[in-house]
Image (cartoon, rainbow, N blue to C red; front, side, top):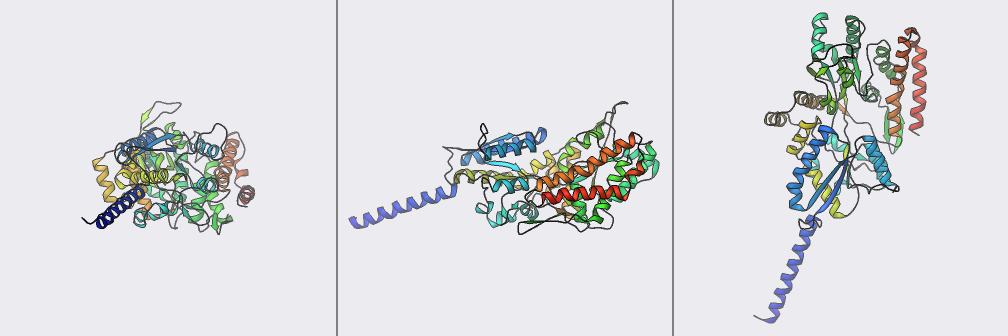
Length: 466
């Protein structure tokens, strides 16, 4: 063969090999099964939730992870607070703090604040438009933070709120009084039902709720006033007087009258003790609803459950909170970022996503996974506890029929939420204790008492929104 032609062919083949090698490396971002990349995840799942998450992590490591050279190491930080403290210690390079994980679970406010300190991966750099469109739009939007509304929180599992009854004791009450569950579709009806139950039971409370801040936030939006509005990185407060009065009348007043109650850390604890028979909780907390009541002054007995949609104010468009932490990815090497996103994409494929959902009570996040036919098929092939499957169905029903609201992230947002979480509830606790101690209930049901709470809370919220 002509030496010149041979040389040209050699150069062409070498160039082709180099090009293919380069494409291969670009496609995998340097990942190799022979030299695995280790990815550290911090989350706050515990108990059954942690077990469900760990099971999927193991499945990934033994399948796609092994093929691509990705090893996921997941660690529970116990609670949301412990996780956030650990994240800030790492971000601030506190002495003795571990290195920042590649992936961590957090809420919008935390992602918003941390992104200013350490920089988080924008998932649009790794996700195609087709892949992005495979997720429920609202769940992706909830993960977009900052001035440029960049996608910094990956949706992995979401929750909302549901109403759960101790059906066993409810049935006795309903049979005796003629009250139906239809009354529990509105906050007005629930308050009236609680009064009827109080009178019928000889002074026992009917209802309690977890995550109290969700009540004024969601109810106010439903009544036409988003308490927190963020525009051009400025927070505007809309703490409407009339809306707050309506919210007050349907929580503080029945609470002080003894119709609502709050004693344990969670309302499922109160149901277990027989202190209440109805609660509002996160759909992901349904797994903790008790199967028996163990009253302090009586014998234990088994109970059944009934899961209902979240109540709303009468003749208004139904609203519910869309919540649940997402997963953020810390900026690092190209290989680690790509490996982190690869795991998140795998975890949220609809089969894996539903598997986690039916074992945890969370809602799946992909459009395929939330289709009722896929949910029902998956539940028939993968039986789970009745309360988890019932809760999942109701949560997905709300997702289809309610306006799902996500409070915006802003500087001071965590503190503002804490104000709403505590001010009315703590006042109700204090005033109910005073009534039990012999104080006249009438002194707590005045316009002046409401206005004192309103003005004090408004002042605290204004300080958070500066």
